[in-house]
Image 1 (tube, rainbow, N blue to C red):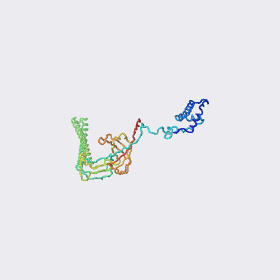
Image 2 (cartoon, one colour):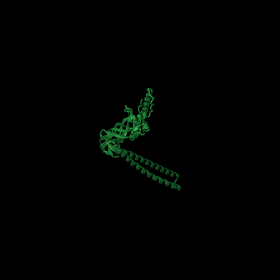
Image 3 (tube, rainbow, N blue to C red):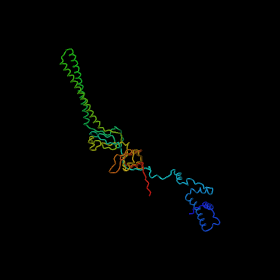
Image 4 (cartoon, one colour):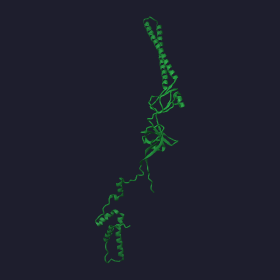
Length: 370
């Protein structure tokens, strides 16, 4: 390719004209060769300088022709400068050794759980006389659920009350005897001071007074024991009325009027519960994810969940707790997630699919070029 411009040719002719002309009589083959070589050197030198050092072209032209070529803009002369002006940085390509923050999606599945849920049993044996609720009813704490009957419990309460009446009467009579013994003892003391009776009579009066005092204390203890017996009998009768331990929803009802239920210890062993109560106002999701994601988890991460029962109504979730132990059989780890604005009608044990977006620091190491 011919790289010489019109100005370059003019420059070469100017340089050639500056060379010394040989004398008129200095002719011959040797001088012609020398002149030809000298002219070639004079022409090739500035051209080579221009090709090797393009930045010196203006200086040469200024010195020989008295004019200079307009300077190119810095963005054209220096590609790095132009790149900095466009991108705002020297090198737009990411540093392969610099950690770059990215996000990673964690998916899993689980079920809706009601942490506050209980199975209600009867504390004592009895026959079901009444059922005040149905499945799905909302109940308040202390509300009557089931009423039982037990004739023996009622009889025990009546007996305890009768025993209490008896002990009260005994105490009253012994208090009267104590009053009499106290008066006799004081009268005898007065007689002894006047030498109207013997000291033997005083000792007998004092003994009678102490015995009456002891009898009163025994009667008072009998009254206390009678009160305790009444309390036990009344508690058993009161427990025949089964009440809600907390506010919630009746999730299951196993009681039937006329059935005889066992005491709690036997009922638990035989799985004979009356009903199940669940607090549906504070439900969560227990889900499993692959244990390979555990390093990305931290409390407060948010995501989205969708229930199989409401697939078109996703809602927000927030990570509350990570299980302290992973499942060796499944290679998963459990999460407990709070619900954020779940759809109305959500119920415990509904299947759920979850998705959590977790930040991840990912180090990308560049390949070493040979």
